[in-house]
Length: 303
Length: 271
Image (cartoon, rainbow over all chains, first blue to last red):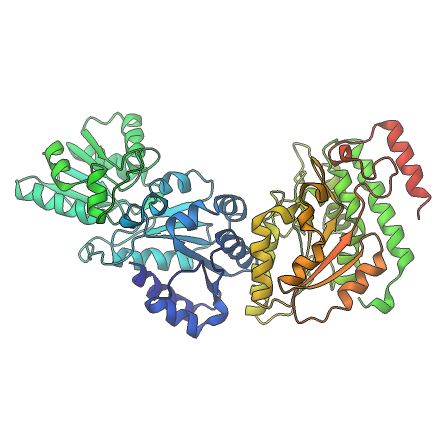
């Protein structure tokens, strides 16, 4: 997904001379290298200095530019948090903070590199908009939208590498709206981000069991599509939320709140990361399983 | 404006007038940061009235007040320039006003919201990069507090400005040697001499008396221009009113009626 992001941003920057990217010592892979060599004045590497990455992006935006701040998610959002709050959100500047490799993608690097709470933290900030594409194609849509919007700051949560295409036949992407990747009438799986691949496999298994399954990418976490979620709760007998995020303040807790508000009568199950630091190493799926997020466990619970 | 056309007496009269205006406001609202505003009065006056071209909303140059708690002086200068109105300042810190104790982006003449320390210089770096990227010749002026140099984020920006060869930055340190708990030089003796630190990080530096308006203009005008410039300005917190000078209580306090009368009388002798 990061290469897709870089390629899309490169294309946008070619069309718009106000697009800048401020990075914090990120490896210049693929199109990021092309960006830096063709537009050196608009590719700014602050080094290992994330606070100034955000402040510089704010300064660029204050002078009419459209900057992206980009590094691994824990460092792009957590390290410079007060700069994001004061410089970007308080001043409501159109800067996109890109959290790359969010969730537990950096599985072998340990808890310092896991981003388990970013949706809650970013969503709590006034003016902040939050996007989390589920595959490379959605990443293109989200990146383009970020490059062209002037509403205010965005936290763009993306994966790393190797994410499969899941949305080739989906409905069109629209900011702020749920996107059905497939429509059914019994079970509705609400999800977003990289774990959508696991949700897709679960949807396939349920369909093989004869269930009519909706699979939905909730790519815009803020503003969340409350009407769309209400409809999903009302039109399915069973709603399942699967997310690679802490139980507090993510999609799961928000869907529960909406369900209460609209007196939903469907069954509702949520599967999230634990409210815990898991000291395991291994693949991303190993880490997710250690948190309780595995197709087997989810299917056993909802089956 | 060039050094040759500098009028020292006019600057002195302006600064006296600004301090008096701040004292007047202090009789209505006690939240002022008066000590820190008085320490950088000559610096902010010098930037707006001597260094910036066409000071006001049409200036190609930019002033960002990194030490946001000193913004009273920025407000009164902007009022004289006609950017803020008398009504704006009269409504300072009131429910129907739009100006508060720290400067807020969105108000006329206020380029960024500051107040949380250590944010300003990074935004200055971004602004300077944008000016360069857009092939414009705008200068970016800023005033930092000496307390801000204790923030790590300030040094990230110091490093970036010189590494990126941002020759369009002129920064002043309002080195009044005070922070809330006492003398800055006692909190961190290792920071001193301050100018040498910026020099070591690749900045051109100058050290001046920060209440000498001529020296302020001279330092900026004489810069070589091949590096960002940091002017370390030695100042006195509460400058201009004897009982406020170097007394940390005036970081927050507003003078009572008798103190106000004494302050006005002292200022009148200085013009």
